Amino acid sequence: MAVFSERLRTGLAQRQTAGLYRHRVTLNSAQGAKVCIQGREYHNFCSNDYLGLAAHPRVIERFRSAAVEFGVGSGASHLVCGHSAPHHELEEALAEFTGRPRALLFSSGYMANTGVLTSLLQRGDYVFEDRLNHASLLDGGLHSGAHFKRFAHNDVAALEAKLQSVKGPSLVVVDGVFSMDGDTAPLAELSGLCARRDAWLMVDDAHGFGVLGACGVGSTEAAGLDASAVPVLMATLGKAFGTAGAFVAGSELLIEGLIQQSRNYIYTTALPPALAAASLEALSLVREEGWRREFLADLIQRFRRGAQQLALPLMASDSAIQPLLVGDPERALRLSAQLRERGLLISAIRPPTVPAGTSRLRITLSAAHSEEQVDQLLQWLADCWSED
Ligand SMILES: Cc1ncc(COP(=O)(O)O)c(C=O)c1O
Image (cartoon, rainbow, N blue to C red; front, side, top):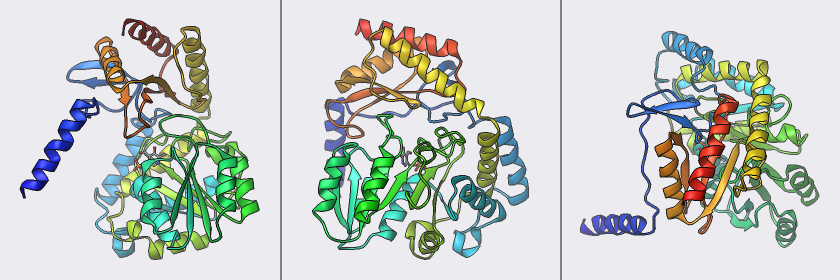
């Protein structure tokens, strides 16, 4: 129908004019501190491979050997015949690692978040979300049928006022580490508030899992919160773990409820078993090689110190996500292009991913980077910043 084509054309033209058109880059190499695009090597400062595990030889080898044993495709959904031994072993290992009775694998973080929210919540309930929550949390909350309430970013007092004004089952949902800002949620305060108000707290720890806490369990470990303080914990495996997929960890009741009711769990093909095996290997590396977290923390400090000396407008973040606030989307794009010419891969993040007027360069650091790479990054950032 002509109307659909016309609508698409108008939408694309509007994005183009507003400087919001998006393009994909095609890598010709594995993920890593350096990547190859059309024959040229770039320093990669925009990946979420925070620990450098995505192309780790042990993870690759485990993937390969599991593919030989279990094949490539899982063949069916978990409830039909797609649930295999590596999936099961990974769920048990993740439950143990996060200190929760059980864990359940989902094919992606997006599916886990929307799956949990639409299963747990019903019409008449209340869901409270930080306004900077990941899109999958916002979408899940909006589609759940519950009253959907957003609160000001990290503002516990604002949330408290909103919680006080409602009567009904309430779920508070936050990112542990905010994906585009890199700052962390005040989890201890939030869990205290939820306990006082008889609400449940759900944490999406996509960017904290593997990186934060003494053992790498993530934001909840860093905040000293157990399963009773955070009844619903979700994390992804495609970031620090370097593989793909996601899981939800919590009580026996929560996990059985999701298995029986979550449409995102039931009506989709299970992840390839070899991916689950690769995630088990990544988990072993996270446990054995604490130096990756320590080195990453050192690089973050080095970057922040350097950026402060160069007066670059860093956002307030202690995590591996270190955004530089630019404001104007066109300038963010220009800066990203100028850095690219020098050999740096950093993406410009623009609305609607971030609020209007807050376009930024989302710089991410990884344990795979060297100190020299971080120093080079700082130098080129300063050059491009002063030239544009
Ligand atoms: C905070 C957060 N939650 C969820 C997701 C979705 O995870 P996945 O990529 O596995 O769908 C992402 C990013 O992708 C994220 O940054």
